[in-house]
Amino acid sequence: MNKEEFKKLKDKRVLVTGAAGFIGSNLCEALIQIGADVIALDNFATGHHHNVQEFKKESNFTFIEGDIRDLETCQKACQGVDFILHQAALGSVPRSIKDPVTSNEVNVGGFLNMLVAAKDNKVKRFVFAASSSTYGDSTKLPKIEHEIGKPLSPYAITKYVNELYADIFGKTYGLNCIGLRYFNVFGRRQDPKGAYAAVIPKFVMQFMAHESPVINGDGTYSRDFTYIDNVIQMNLRAITTTNQEALNEVYNTAVGDRITIKAMAELLREELSNYDEQIAEVEIKHGPNRQGDVPHSLASIEKAQKNLGYQPSHVFGEGLKEAVDWYWKNL
Image (tube, rainbow, N blue to C red):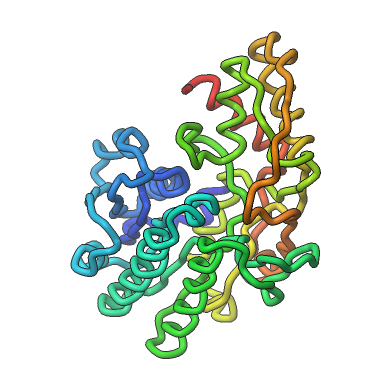
């Protein structure tokens, strides 16, 4: 990604919610490098202090510790802001099945607070993290933005409600919104620990400890794994596009290719064995399918290419090499 493309963001005031999380911290880093004035908001429910610690010495970075469930906090964070990259949410399908109330409070109630604060503070553009889980029980591949099924989890419902609210705020209040439906994002700073860790960092940590990772099901489920740099590019394109037709729409944020979970695990083992030969001998095991999981995920990225000029910088294999190198040096 050529940061020169986005130099118009220099000195613009950009609020990143969920800034101490995996995606949020990577967005903060990119914006700081571009020269934007970054306001970061997080309550550390799932984010980490170490993800933002290095940014606090930068003159163009301001951190606010607060919760999007509090409207006053949202109003304060949005003061004087040009653009918002809203990443704050409680992720994870299993978490939402275990505790749907909290997922709804954060993902729906908190989202609505942010929309209201953005509207009240006359923010120019509100870009938010949507989710591929919105496609639900639709079996059609590739996934096309305007064709969705019924949600398969409370988490999926919350993310679809976000899209509906954003659409209404666009039509009713003139707030320019863009939703980015993330497809299985992975890369540096993604947390490998905890009950709801994403599959790639979790498997990395297990392989590095010479422990067998367990695939849910027979491993034939497939995913459009999307490297973090592709996601950064989509967010930056969404807040800088001058194409009026691009506004108040949702976009798949993906590569447009897929790999089975089994093949991903085998490739991951192979990459890690370049650092530790013993990892090549670690067995990959299988367990039962996980409730709420979508069998197959593959995005059409034509709409993002056409309206936003998006071109993925990393296919899966390239992203995995970079991610593995980062984990080896930082875990």
